[in-house]
Image 1 (tube, protein in one colour):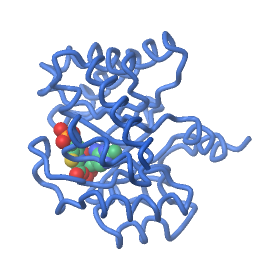
Image 2 (cartoon, protein in one colour):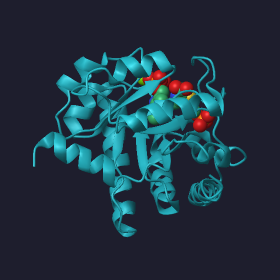
Image 3 (cartoon, rainbow, N blue to C red):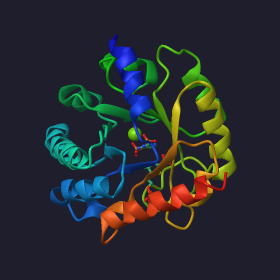
Image 4 (tube, rainbow, N blue to C red):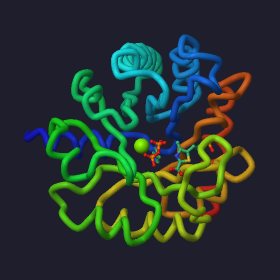
Amino acid sequence: MSPAAARRRIAEATDWRLYLVTDPHLGGGQDAVPGIVAEAVRGGVGVVQVRDKECDDDEFAVHAAAIAAAADRAASEVGRRVPVFVNDRLEVARELGLHLHIGQRDEPLARARAALPDELMLGLSIESDVQLVEALADPAVAPDVIGASPVWSTATKTDTAPALGVQGADRIARVAADAGVRSVGIGGVSPTNVADLATTALDGVCVVSAIMAAPDPRAAAADLLARWEAGRGTR
Ligand SMILES: Cc1ncc(COP(=O)(O)OP(=O)(O)O)c(N)n1
Ligand SMILES: Cc1nc(C(=O)O)sc1CCOP(=O)(O)O
Ligand SMILES: [Mg+2]
């Protein structure tokens, strides 16, 4: 199997329903994050992204390696595979052999795809219909997953594009699905609104504060997933 085919198999086998993006501040410091991730995976998180905007690449690499090890251990306990993405930092993703998520103001898509080993997935933030058309134009460099962003405004990240809302995220998810690309909705997702997103064509939701700031990350993940499933049932 070619590395690109292996990557597509990983995307197909991944449980995208609940995707956790880490935040050391909300989690009580870098050292606390691997434990939170392990608990969140035990609660049902299927994908993890390591995000830390403040440290340098060397510190980030140590932090990301600790999180990936914790996610792997917890995933194997429950008999699952949980892919780990690196936020923004292409060189760290290459060094650690982790997947990469980039935004519209990070490394350009074609350059990131060319520099990333073929077996690693590439995620891209999509803030508008036009951005999605551009991202899908060349199947050779198209992302494996997109983050429809933001669905709702959020205090966790304030420098975002205007909110897409449920309908905007659904429109984007439908176009992505037609191209065979997975999609998750990010921004302001909480227990009170996750079921609304489950009625869309999105493959899942992506959260930061709803798990990182929760007193019990395992219970928070299980609750979000149960609410997603309940909403999915009403589609
Ligand atoms: C899954 C997912 N979707 C969107 C984002 C946001 O990425 P970006 O716009 O590059 O912003 P930062 O996260 O880098 O501040 C994401 N991280 N993950
Ligand atoms: C990391 C990130 N990216 C966003 C985007 O819209 O691109 S919103 C966001 C933070 C989402 O945090 P919370 O789940 O706490 O609302
Ligand atoms: Mg970014």
